[in-house]
Amino acid sequence: MEQQETKDSLQDEPVYHHQLVGKSITVLGTAHVSKASADKVKELLASGQYDGVAIELCPSRYNSMINPDSLAKMDLFQVFKEGKASMVIASLALGAYQQKMADEFGIEPGAEMRMAIEQAKEMKCEIHLIDREIGTTLKRVYSNVPWWKKMGIVGGLLGSVFFNEKVSEEEVERLKEGDILETTFAQFAEEAKELFGPLIDERDQYMAARIEQVVADSDNQSILAVVGAGHLKGIESYLAQDEQIDIIAGLHSNAQQKIDQLDALPEKSIWPKFIPWMIVAILLTGFAIGFNKSTDLGIQLIIYWVLINGSLSALGAAIAKAHPLTVVGAFFAAPLTSLNPTIGAGMVTAAIELYLRKPNVGDFSDLKKDTTHVSGWWKNKVARTLLVFFFSTLGSAIGTYVAGFLIFEKIMG
Image (cartoon, rainbow, N blue to C red; front, side, top):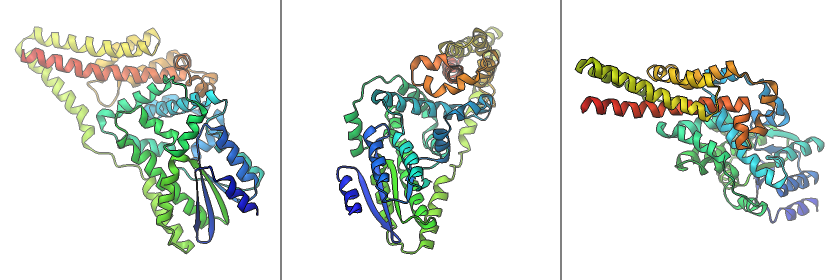
């Protein structure tokens, strides 16, 4: 009777029922900022029909959810040193956009996941994290985008923070019929096709494999999987492909093989590493040709290079409201770092900004809240340092091409 009541309560919800090796799986599609989704998760788990809960979270996102102060432990200088600044900016921009939408409805983003965690603990259900690590996903997204679009992706995500269009709760509920809010990532990029694979489809495969792994490795007989509605059809399709597997050992082996493949970081192509050095070689050749023609022309070319590259990088730092000395540092650093691919202008400007305006514990604690507002990115010292890195790097990159074309125009003229 209770099982029938549970099924009846799901009639109007995006849901998928499945059987694997004699165990029952219910995959519920939710909208990540919907109060109705959170309420539905609570209702289902309170029914007592489930002894296991699988949720669309990876370990790091789960830890961040249950330990909001984890950002305070971030070593910002290490982030820049290890080249992870773009990933941190992307993560903050994604979270900020989702938070802005959630604020309109008075509900925290991921409320249905929090509800699943809290209710599962109350009902003594086993909790399983089935999503792929967000860092792995972002790296695979980044590697799937052509090199000339990578900065545009990060810029598009920053642009999402300035997205002010009002969205009604009814419209969010309609998202259950289509794509999940993660497609926001693609919404601000020029070409969504390059993002769909690693961002959506691969995670559909991953979560389906993790559900199979939970079925094979746990004692749970009835599992509720709480995932974004946009992943429902994909997960359904991938689970259906393996429905003929009727032994636990085979299911575990099949799932583990898929997980290992999808967890593997993409091999970095070698040739893009040579592009910066090729640009340096071309520029140095241009300077040499200029000096060969006349000393005055050679000096003129160097002046163009310093003024254009340095000014645009300094302008980027100024846009980020960097310390005046950081702006000066950008002007002098960019022309030199552009000729040394082992270090970028952003690394130098971020280091100067960190030295002059060291973030305090409060800046780290308020980072998520501050980045939901445009002004917060400039007010928070952590976010502002990330912007200093981003805009000074962008300015130097633009300056390299503008100055480069001008130099060769002068040589050929």
